[in-house]
Length: 348
Image (cartoon, rainbow, N blue to C red):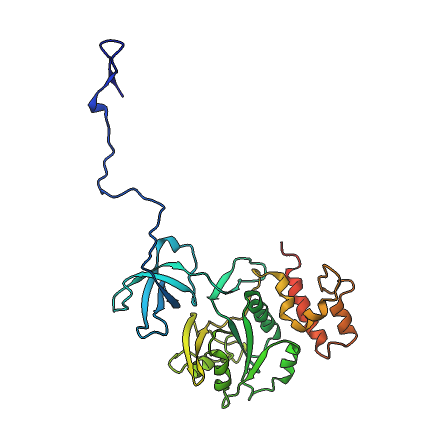
């Protein structure tokens, strides 16, 4: 920048006006700021489901003006997961009229989070559902064969999230589930059995009243069939089990919340896609023992820092099994516990 020399030393220098440069603002927009609007006019809505970046939310729940609205997420939430069951703060056009789109600008504090990982070594969590207080595990007595250790994993995930587990055994007309159910002796676990012509919709429905219950299970066990029986207008797709592989075909492809209405009241059914594995890489390993409530009671007599693994010295659980104090299923339950604990023994 040039300037004009003063006539004498007492005068201030004079700048040439042509040297002043001002950066143009052709868009005439305001400078960006990190401050976000408060959205004091936001309404609270329940997230019912998500499809290709669009969220179906329920506004005015249980009120005379209850209705669903299609919404997208605000830019500031692009890195925050929004899942079925969330209580969302919604602004914009919340009329629900055709062609309208509201915006989710915030998520209320969650009471619970059910999570899983791709495998036991992956600590990146996948959130399945928020704010559920019950988990209904659906397993078949046959076709496909029941997997006790997969159920163990569901129980661990439920207790890690602070969610009460329930169990439904379907297809009991094909096989007697009694031997399978002995694996869970000693657990505080309510069990329902279901056959082709004897579906326990009334008993299961009574357990759903006043709760948000997430349904989980292996593909092909009849979970969607049970959901359709409980919520007649759900119209969840059902499939079959491959005769060669013994595996079920994935039918439900998304997680959705459905309102259950029964003679004793209402609740929420949260149906999830079937899975063949359930990674626990994200959980607090201290909660694994809590899934085995009968073993956890015995473990109170273990020495401090006991790992409960096969080489653990003076393990009270191992002593109780050896002495026969845990009954004929004690050894199997201890083995299941040790397998889960061993999976995480070397996790950093």
